Image (cartoon, rainbow, N blue to C red; front, side, top):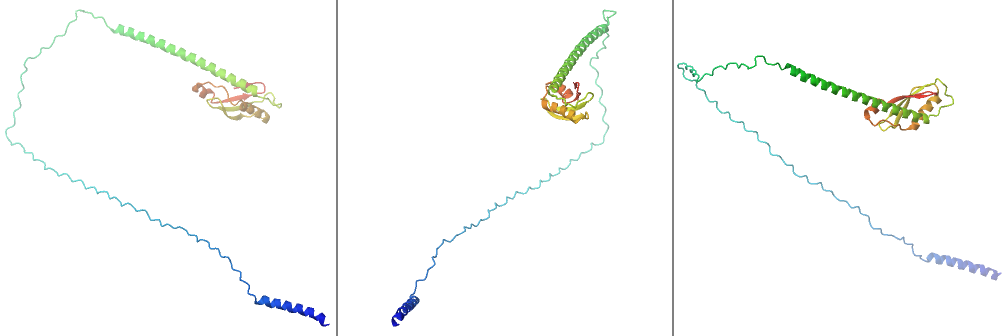
Length: 243
């Protein structure tokens, strides 16, 4: 019986002794690690206002001195006396006698008017010949210009016909008129329908043909281009094509 109580009693004493020992032991306190961070400083700089240069005063213009008025000299009237005698005219030294008219040896001088008329008629003939030559040159130039215009129009027609694909709905009697705008280099810049054929497919095929051409041959002469190819119309028909 006693033996059975000794062991638990010893264990209890040992346990309480350990607890009391733990209470009396002074454990070292945990010290917080303090990290000294270098203080951050903000550098502040005082900006001194720039010294203003002293204003330069311009010297005041001195008023111009008024010119002193000079006294007007008095004009003394001549003393009254006898009126001056008029100067006597000097006598002519040697009067020149009037020359008598010269009498021509020829009693009937020939008039010069016919010669002047002959010269005038000759100049009129030269002027007429010059005008005729200029007229002929202008006529030849006009014919040459017309030939050039016709040649360029024919080339534009051929270019459009080669690119025009007529739609299946095209019928005889349809007409579409397009307004074409070009620049001096011949590029097409605008195509508008001036008159519709009433068939959208037909109008669209005509517009596409001109747009696909992109550029036409035009005369290099600026006057011919401005007068005939800057803006022109193209008549589209299923059977033919006309400008």
